[in-house]
Every structure is written in structure tokens, then in C-alpha cells.
Length: 266
Image 1 (spheres, rainbow, N blue to C red):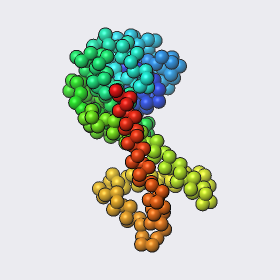
Image 2 (cartoon, rainbow, N blue to C red):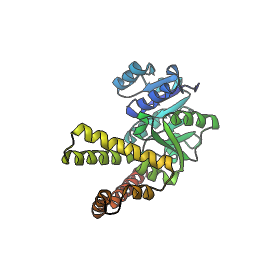
Image 3 (cartoon, rainbow, N blue to C red):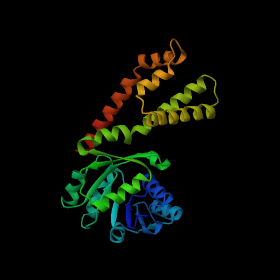
Image 4 (cartoon, rainbow, N blue to C red):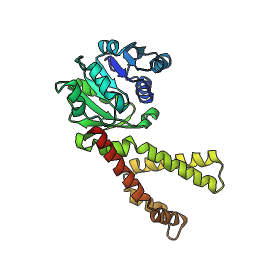
């Protein structure tokens, strides 16, 4: 178990999921977790549901914590950083568009900072969290954060120059997948399936297909070919997807997302 006092600035869905997952996996202790949110009802909600410590102000949280985890929206980052910059505490940020160098531009170049880009499936214990490299945390500090996020899914590493691409693929990726699941379910309803059955079929199909990619080691094209029989039903559907620019739409969307992330970071 991590024996470090962690202070969460921001008590929204992501902070709650990180804390809940860490507690469930016995990686952290509720008595070592402090939360603060400008919306006091959010802090109290996490306190009541997870038995952690809610702080009345950001100074109280900084004074009680060994490490700070910033889990606020990008637009709230600047005032938060200005509020904590007088404290010599390692800082971990999960805000989109805020790389370590940009954060240090406010905190000071000497501060110990790590940027992590998680995604929402960590709420189900299947997150993908990417650590920006290099970072300036001490080895033990980094190991603590690695253990925490590894308990919520998988951890990977990417240089700062690729974090916009990471944001576009894994950070925003769940939204694209949800849209596909919804569209597949809608198609099932169009073809006569009850809504609940169509949604169950589409979501389990995506889950199973993802596991096949991860566990089989086969190229995705090979896996697709294994489903497509000559002159069969699946290849007919694949033809329609290709005719309607399925791949191109995804690629263009991810490219636009990466460009937007880059613009936010400037």
C-alpha cells in the first residue's frame, strides 16, 4: 500500500474514479487521501462515499498532502497553479493541453512535475494512462503514481511531443468508440432487435474484439479478414463502410483532435 498523503485538487468524475479504484485495489488508504474542490458539494460527496478527507481550502490541502494531483478542467489550471506554486510539493496533472513545461512556466522550472493523460475507462478498471516523458519527479514519487494508475488499467509512456496524439487517440478515443457502439445498436434496432438486446450485442462485440486484438497478437487486418467470408455478409458490410469513408472519417477526426490539443497547449 502507498504510504503517502495524496491531495486531489478537483473532485469530479476522474478524481473520484482514481480514488475509488485505488481504494478498491488496496493501493491507497482512505485516511491518506485529501480532496478539495471549489464546489464544496463535490468534495463532500467524495468524502461521504469514500471516507476520505475533504479540505475547506486549497492551502489546507497543500499543507496536509505529500503529493498533489490536479484533476481540474484545462480552463481552471492557471488559477490552481498560481494558488499552489508557493508549496514545494510534487505535482501530477491530468489536465488536457497542459504539458509539464507549460505547468512549470507558472510553478517554476525547479518544481517536480509529471503530466498524465488518462481516459475515462479507468472508472471501470480498464483505463489507459500515458505518462509524459521525461518528468522531474523523484524515482520514489514516480513509482507511487505508477502504482496508482496501474491499479486502474494500463500505463504507457510518451515524449512530450507526442502527447497531443495520445490525447486524440486514447484520451478522446472512448467517445469515438461509444459513438460506434451506439450506431451499431441503432442499426440493430432498425433491423428489428429490441433496444436492450441491440446495445448488449454491440457493446459485448466491441469488448470481445478489443480483447482479440490485445490477446491474439494478430494484425487487425488479419482479424478482420477472418470474419469476412468470400461473397459473404460481412464483406458486403465492409464494402459499404469503405464506400462511406469509415476509416478516413476516423483518421480525420483524430487529426483534428490532436491539432485542437496542440492549440490548447500553446
